[in-house]
Length: 143
Image 1 (tube, helix red, strand yellow):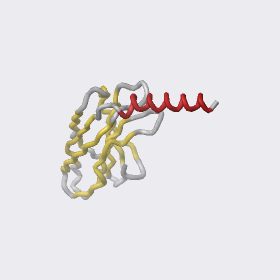
Image 2 (tube, helix red, strand yellow):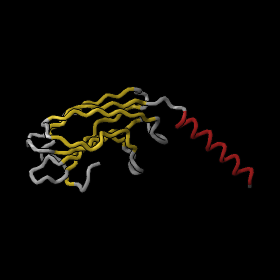
Image 3 (cartoon, helix red, strand yellow):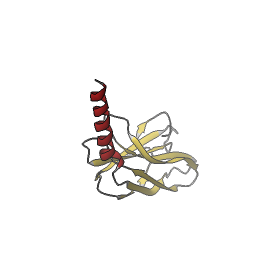
Image 4 (tube, one colour):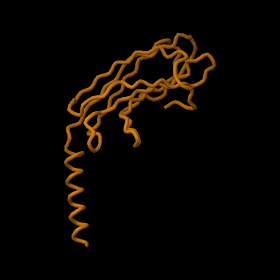
């Protein structure tokens, strides 16, 4: 019995090494400018995820919560991923902007499913400029 368990453990270790650890990493870069034309102090948070439905998503990077009185604010995020699980040959990328550029000052979150990227792409660049005013679903916090 111990021999069978040892063999299964070794096969599992070698398989996961081949499937996950030996892949070439993919470098992600997303940037753009957010716009809030309400001319008041407003706050926002930008994040990029690799979606792993039904499992937990992988956060690639984020531009932490910032507050400004400027109408325009640039962001820039970068991150790395190495593989995307068993039998999955694409990264499924989603970006979020949480903000309070709303009439009532409530926090809203905009979601943008950017694209699917093959694991063979080693550099991915995304540009997303967005007027956030009163856009998105209501949420309780920036993230």
